[in-house]
Length: 469
Ligand code: TRP
Image (tube, rainbow, N blue to C red; front, side):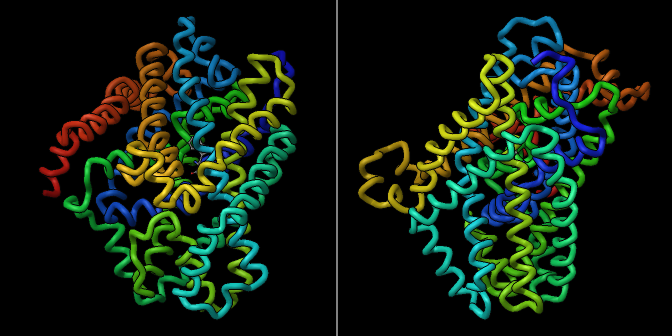
């Protein structure tokens, strides 16, 4: 595609909505609450928030800037922004690997949400107790044909939207559905304030207890700050490449990070208020929202409509995120290998769909004792399923390492001139702050956390212990 005919967003607001559409998804509503529950609450939340502000924001700016400057897909954008060797394709390749793995399990979880939307419509939850709803979830996890069906639906929808192209495919949906999701969450927030467990939920989420946090949990918090902002994989390079050159970036990236974080926190408050009001386990794992929310809906005035609306909006939020992951790959094959857009969306879609089968089978066929014996050390030793493996590998390693490389590229190779161009500001404090955070702080934080994982010692952990210990 030649540069002058390359697709672009219709404007600033459209881009914010698209970037927010990518960022806001299952990461905020499904993943954040359940990993917060597994990692003991407050301390985990604090690290996640600090990472969004200190590590996430500069890298977010870097990605959008690189895309906007290069007007090219994530693999080739680096070398076009600055005449460097083709070894700067490495973060792009790593990003494509992440994209394959992430979308494969993301689609399966998206399928669970679709299944719960269907069950909401046929009023399967009305009047049910928490235990009965838990039974429904267990039966979904053990029923692989049912998961397979919804995984098929989710992946087909994702491919269909990407085939529609940037403007018609994405923009139209984002405009209406993101604000609607926000409004519904606000409503739920007001509702849970009247639940008996609200206070306990607030202290669980916002009073840090470092003793509950292990090295792997710290890495998970850092990794999640990348996952939830769609960072470290080139998705925002790709979206930035459709942004016209005149748009200014800092306000955009701050707006996206702010909305994304607010949604995760509200989802967290809602879910843990339910957990503590109905005596549920905070560390229940990936099924957490699917047990808690229907329990609230089944007891709430207007619960039927709210349940139908909620799972519908979460499905759309998940789809707009999935679309950004697929688009990152499709942009590469169409641009760099001249593959027809339709063809590449279909082929990539099918490959990811097949890879997703491993996640579909993770809670049933592959979870049997027989299989675990057969699979030997890799899976059974850590009790990891493919689903867990793909998630951990990407969130905790690929995305942070990708982000680290992007930060280094921005700080050391592009340097001050580019940062000034990205911020479109002469504010010295801002520009210098960004420069050193891209050069030292963001990469340092990621390295420090990896250090912590290997040696159980790190600079951050030491500081954290001094402050809260
Ligand atoms: N951020 C999305 C979420 O929170 C998921 C996502 C979309 C993503 N695009 C990404 C994660 C790119 C990592 C990289 O649900």
